[in-house]
Length: 473
Image (cartoon, rainbow, N blue to C red):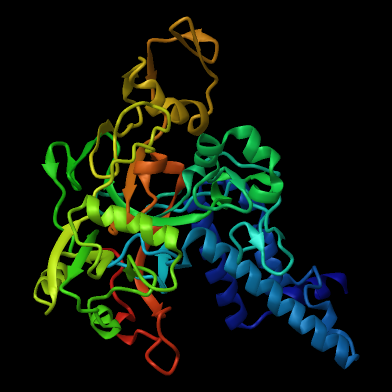
């Protein structure tokens, strides 16, 4: 009798056996991909779910209580939806929304992107116990969306491509490991440089709590990779040079300009046609603005050789919109904005580099060695100490790595240099440095939705022309 009952468990329709075989193959292929064969111990669970049914997986379906059946039906559906979302978001793809104008006019604020994690190979999660639909904070509850332990070491699965120069890349913000909760920009380390560590940590009323985030729970950023590991990068008068060669022309690249007219005020409709958003549209001296701001702007206008008595605008233009602006009736002068600020990466490194003239700087490459000296130390200190987890000390001019005197350092990872196409309005590697390979999330594939923040739903908020636009260039 017991044998008959056992045989009955295996007497399943052919359709059920096919399902079991297909899902078993999918599971085995996944195990081979992640290279964690201990997961094979769960293969009998797949067999039992489809064929043997020793474990009563759907025990609740036998209940005669309709309310209980309905509730458990929802629980069952939500559980499997969350499991599917967890694996899809961690290993295949995820959604990303462009929050800032740093990549305009290539990608626009309000673009929603499908980001492929399989392109460069998905990372095994550093924090495996996390809610799949939140990066680091659960909405409404305003609490962490992950459990910090266990922490897994960095490992990346095989992808079908490699990160190349000029790729647009989504990555975790490198200096987002420590966060002042009331300030997201500038980052914690820049705040400490500007205001002092004791002030930032002590003034919770201004800066908020100081918290730590693991690599895969840091904010997602999207920029263009302008230099890869092993490259030399330099910026001269806003022109990027990689290994001595000019960066190829990118149509979306834009810079900030001052535009003076003969007294004519530029209409909003004209600026919309040129792609100038409300946030970027700035008349430097105007009614309703404080006298102090107007006075400061008037001094700036005089410095650049413009007349403060006539309208002067300040906004970004790319090559195309710059050419069109030259032909606008009433426009008399256009001049590029220049910056002399030296608060650039490495902060306090005394390099005298600016946003417009930067470097030369070498991008670290795995397996390559670097001579340690007073010039290099400020540039690569964070890489050696934080990203590659070494104890680094300098005693009487001698460099000690993990307690041993060292004249050179050999890098364990590849690094990348990321910049926005909106070059004068992008917080990028010029301000916070290198992006380690373990911070790379994936590559945007296409725009699946685009909403114009400057327009209402009735007046063209949905940018239909951007649907399924290639987001890779």
